[in-house]
Figure (cartoon, rainbow, N blue to C red):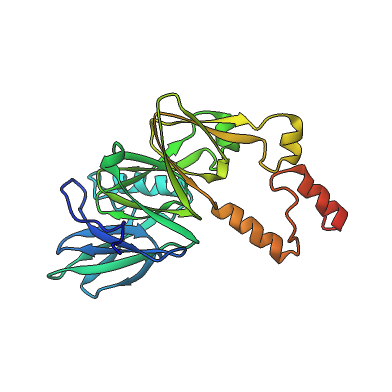
Length: 274
């Protein structure tokens, strides 16, 4: 059965890489490089590589754009704002023929390959979504324009912005759904489940309903309100939710009385967990 995430090459500014995504819940992406081609990845993401692929740690996003030291400094500063390391690692094929390098996702879920020129050249995604990319893709920041959205939007004021025309590989939790919104079409999503969207999508907040729903519904106070046109990627299991469940289990709080609601706090009081 052919892998739907196999790619054959095209042309563009970024290095055009071949790749294959393997695995199910704990996936890794295997990238094939021609001589002189490069891929850039988060520090610590590598699983394995062929010996002919050299590894260089760079200051900033490794996009290869001009700007000298100040440009690298700006790129590093943007990465720091999104909670990532100041450094990325560039993997370059220095030999002949084909060579491969593989990068693994650190959390259960899926690695989603997106060709940036197919979505208008820019992708907005959650802060820790970036895993790897073709050399030439720039990693920046996107600020939430509205204070309330920044405070309660699940990802805070700052999200990652990926620019270019090449392939990027973003990691998302659980199962991933892609929705294409028509102009004016509105979709309500749990704030933590918004994994990525194109810049044409308007990201705002909307209250979940009445006071009873806010206090006892378990969905928090706000929905993410996404308005088209554009594409949206939704993840079923944000890492923050998974980590919260693991913390509950580790602390002996196995029962879920309503995530994000006052009911959970009331249950803690009854059980003497406060």
